[in-house]
Length: 216
Image: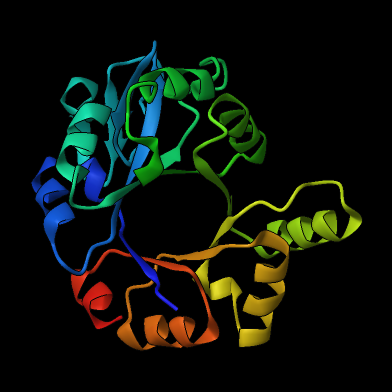
């Protein structure tokens, strides 16, 4: 089975966009946020209403963030794109609608969307049903919630991307794949762990390291 190799955060940094053409990279990932209809990529959260983001590297101007067009241009004919859609502010509107409009003319066959907020993921799917949308699972509680809801039939089969440390055996991967149809894992930065997860049957692996992706 072929595993999709995703370079984590490559879409957040202009210096890394060229890695979309690397032979070990099947897709580049970006954290994207909607601002008044404009989609920008950056990892750190915005500093309230101010036009800055703040993180370990200090302040960064929001206006310097990578645009969606830059990401799509870098990936075109080179790699797929995984957009991790974030909610900019509690009252920041519905980013699913903004993303749908931004992708209206894009080649959506090569774009996937993930969301920590599962209701947001559902809205993205409603807006652009031809794009693959996945729920992001970050905790054991979320994993149990997903499995219980699938078994009860209260949610449809929806692909998932899951923190890799939540998976301990190949049977767990098989159980999740039966209910989700597609299982991606993040963020795997050790080659041995990546190869183990490949052997267990995951569909996609996200890593910060090209060397890990190259080993798969």
